Image 1 (cartoon, rainbow, N blue to C red):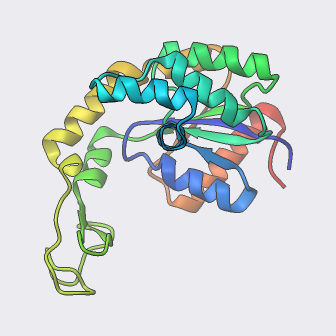
Image 2: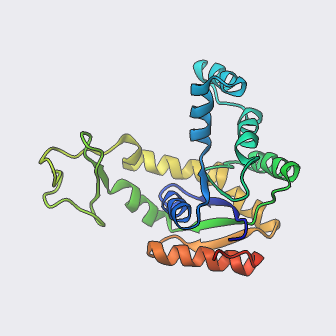
Length: 221
């Protein structure tokens, strides 16, 4: 397989994490999450982790330059990767471009997961969880046999705060404000590969691969 360096871009509920996991399992691409990197650096007490912790303890956001520093350490030894959830703003995208230029590892493509807002709201608000085991259900796609009751232990299911209607609408609005401009940013660079995120999982995977192949000739084998 040729090197594939990808950014997965899309609103909450668009299936980025599902596809990242599929690519990780099928092609060995590392799924890189800034949240995971941040937690690891803080836990290990690295200089960047200590710097990040000082901002977090003060209730502030970790600056982009600290995040980029952590990303550099993570990406330096990898030929292929998927960035899921980063960049979130045009400023972060510009900083990422500079880092990848420094490393000599330009992006292969930026996959845009396109989906209607109504469908995303339905996906996110329909999720219910067993707080005792972590098992999840969906009212439309994977309902329990008895509404509100877990099939396994017969206990009550709960809806997480992040999955309530008001919070979901707010999350999507934040995405539109801060992250959606990245679509234009990467389109101007000729990197954008749009896919229909509402298709079945296997179809979305195939569409991603076809789009990457069409743009770069760097398909997986």
